[in-house]
Length: 205
Ligand code: HEC
Ligand code: HEC
Image 1 (cartoon, rainbow, N blue to C red):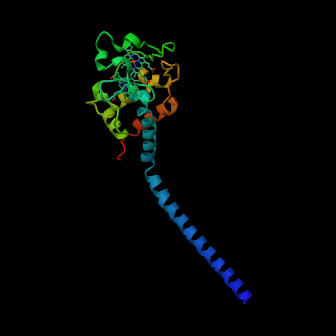
Image 2 (cartoon, rainbow, N blue to C red; image 1 turned 90 degrees about the vertical axis):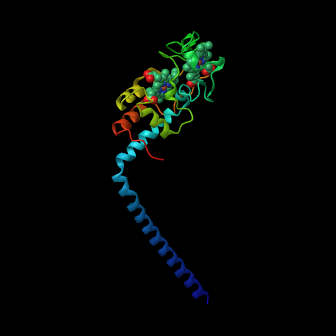
């Protein structure tokens, strides 16, 4: 009686493991088939999307958005609070213009950030509150982007001093270093070039 029970259990275990192995094997086979094929077909598209997302990790960061607001008020700091002293877009033009305080380079004693021609991005270049896709659409649209070709946009994104300032942002008025964008500058520049060279394709949602 004991022997029969033992045998039944042993056979049971054997059968279970065999069916487990078969099930696992076929699942693995299946996933290999499912995963490799589209990967080869879409490798350019995937490369473009990876580059797009890396670029957008930077463009959606406060170091850029603080100067590309959707209202008329520049923002400050990591929490993107409205610029102190009631500064608005109007100050781009009148006597207390941005350059009364903002010089060509950071002032790490007063905490005023600086770069050549420090000013607020024009109304058509408002990015605050937009999705990655909407920012890209606006950035590539000649009606919004200052009539730039994709190549012009690439140069702006990889060479312009207001853009590159984001990786040398200095310290704030309390002396705390400003946060850098989440992607190192070299990797970001490479991502921008890759994305534009692969046709500047904006992914669909
Ligand atoms: C100090 C304010 C300031 C900061 C900081 C800033 N920008 Fe701008 N940005 C501007 C101004 C002003 C213009 C318009 C200049 C022009 O058209 O030549 C502009 C224009 C642009 C344009 C061209 C217009 C378009 O829509 O294609 C791009 C691209 C751009 N900025 C990207 C960035 C990125 C990326 C960052 C952050 C890494 C950044 N900017 C940070 C002020 C700023
Ligand atoms: C009265 C002096 C003054 C004027 C005028 C002024 N700013 Fe500022 N701005 C400051 C100071 C001080 C800071 C630093 C605050 C801090 O970070 O603690 C600052 C910070 C900023 C920042 C924050 C950068 C970041 O990412 O945290 C932006 C953007 C900015 N100013 C844009 C502008 C623009 C655009 C104008 C003109 C429309 C302007 N400012 C006019 C004094 C001024």
